[in-house]
Length: 209
Image 1 (tube, rainbow, N blue to C red):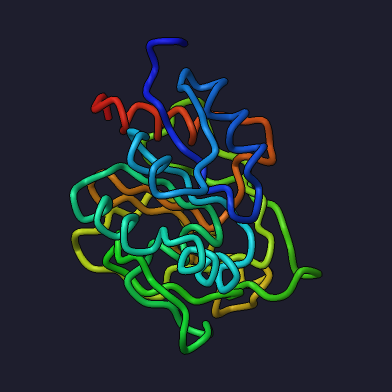
Image 2 (image 1 turned 90 degrees about the horizontal axis):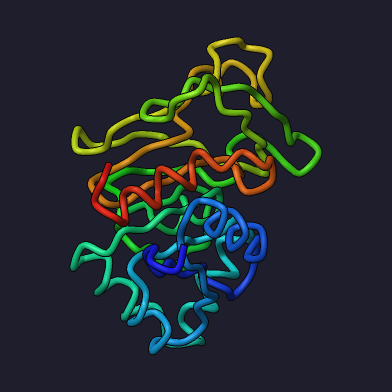
């Protein structure tokens, strides 16, 4: 594991510890990132779940917003789960007017699309690029992808069952995507013990996927 890539987890808010553990289990060296100097040292970055508007504000306060945008534009691999997906998108619906976007994914996401905390749910998803059967996904105040450019590869959708939280409008919505070196999920694989999504990201950082 000592030879694995050094992958940071943005440690301003959210599921930091869980992502660090999943990355280490996936063969990476994992470290918390709170400062521009720490960001400059990593080979890739995970943006965890949490509160996207709070994380957006903290990126500015901790002077990480511009360096992170620059590294993404230069091709640094990144993975965002839930709030991380929102931050990586080029545009967000139902966010704050002053919310910052990182522009790593050419798509529009809808914040809290599946409903409030009480509308959290779990579902097994077919996930392109991940072997071993469906991925068990945990959705907590989750976004969905409203629309995406042809450059964005769709990796997973929720079922087209209208009984899914969010009703008919939620059926079949996109919940996992990839665009080049950037990966995002609307759900939280770090909470399930299934490291396959993190392993995929480690392989992306290593240039093997």
